[in-house]
Length: 90
Image (cartoon, rainbow, N blue to C red; front, side):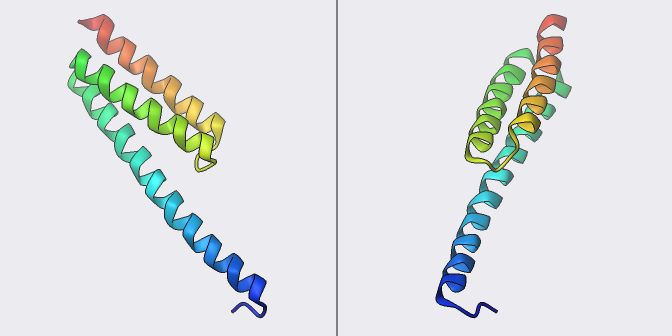
């Protein structure tokens, strides 16, 4: 337990940040999952739209510090590569 008022405040702040970060991270996971599903189904238009949504979510999360920028960049790159492969196959 926190012994000082400032430590109690830091705990409250940490809880708020954690709740916000969990929400953002969940949204990113959902967007990436939808993009992967669209890519595996082979629908070029759906894959492109889902990729755009996932890339946007990853960029926003990395700008907020929820996801490391290199990790976000790596995931975007891999999704883009897969989406391009689907688009080229059509």
